[in-house]
Length: 401
Image (cartoon, rainbow, N blue to C red; front, top):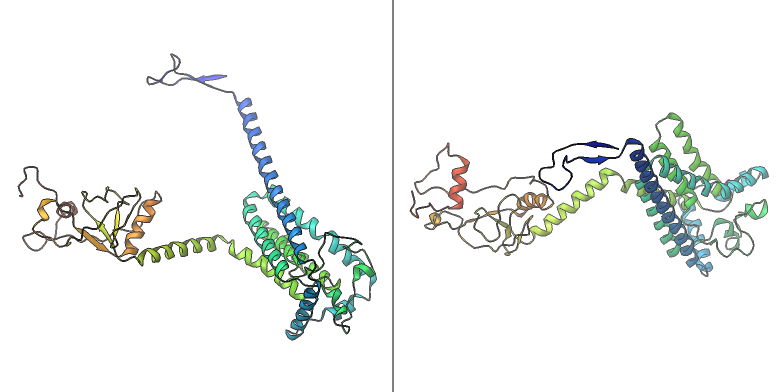
């Protein structure tokens, strides 16, 4: 241990006023242990959060169970809408892939074995190696997955492989059942096969591509765009999703990405402040007392701001009533009576609200200075003299002049 002497200035302590300071090795260990504990708590908390999200998602999907007729009817509608939009026919695309059974088997394995491992690896990579980006990535996945769950509940949809039951002219087949491996085993009571809309396979693959392109700076990062492209082709040729499923899944992620941009957050805060000023402005014009004797004024920036309705706001919660006094100078001006000055409410709020948050005002309030009894105001009149006239301070002897 080492000691650093310093004056005690009358405080209780040793005679020399020295404070013990631990040596570097023990302090380094304490700091290192504290950082490790904090990182562990953070990591475990985030994993539990994502685990809870997954459980809620899997549980919510089960709400579509028992609505198979509705899901098949929705499948017919989606198929008709895609033909109306002139989107590529999923059946024709699958027929091209049927020329290679090895390709379809590989697509089935990709559908089963890439979606979750790739997504989990990406999330762990961001959480551990790029924690600065983690809050936004976490918000995007929470928002997009929550919105997808709501669509699953409100709009059950049978996947394309079930369409031949309703539309015999559609030649789609279940490639997992025919060529294997299948993601759905016999007696599976957990997976809900009637929640095709939207496709989170496509949505999360776009999330992974966006995150890698945003975080990394090398040119090789653009290769990750192949991931959502391959995923979209796989979910279509395996007859697990429609084109519209992928479009909506990707649209949810893209919307969440846009809403979490810093500039969008700043714009939303500005809209909130503007809306608040508009609401306050509906109460009427604000009246700001410039004297120090008004009950609502306590001096300094952010003192009481009295509205025409008689309510005051301020950084120190000063509340004052308007006196209704004429702001023009009158016979009682020299007797110390305060004269409220009317200003637009938007200007008053622009000056007071920042002070209420502990910041200096961003705008100066316009001051109406009363004229002296003699007539016109001198050109070189100092501001302090104007404030003295407005405050109406009475001389010490009780007589003016």
